[in-house]
Length: 240
Image 1 (cartoon, rainbow, N blue to C red):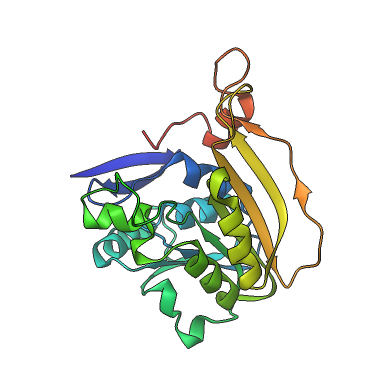
Image 2 (cartoon, one colour):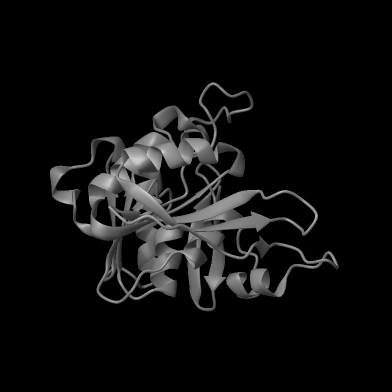
């Protein structure tokens, strides 16, 4: 079933129960990432285009959304058109594990909310489309980082979100792809609970030096959504 959600005042997107929906992780990553004037960005594992679209709305460059599933690509194209972003965005149906030659060393920015869970892990969705989005059945963090490393120009930036308990795998994959972690921020549900997400920026062939940023709290000491979290969402909870 399809749903239409307003993501910013005057901007709406289509979401479909068959495909992975806009999540908190994507919203937080879109705020952490930077797309500057004149830059070309690539969203790997784009789904229905949520990350690419919000980055376009927050930034000033151009974005390509790369997605393997034809149905998700069709919705992503509709979403770009609904938001009036056709001139700055495009959707390509392709497998990031076999990045076409014309897409290599072309981009200033790559971003991805990659699958987090092993394909062998219990509890993977029985839906093939949702399983592909959430599990590593169609490629995991190593393949995503390799694709980002291939797509980026020297000095290009890769923005990714990942689970804290799997940071070892992420750092190993980044190193293998020639990507150096430069900025990292952990997301906490509340001050007394462990982190649930890490936002990271890596640079292709970047020099040594990792900046650990202040934590991002979803809820503050009172139990209410933090002011920063509310500001990122613009007062809206459009992933619900």
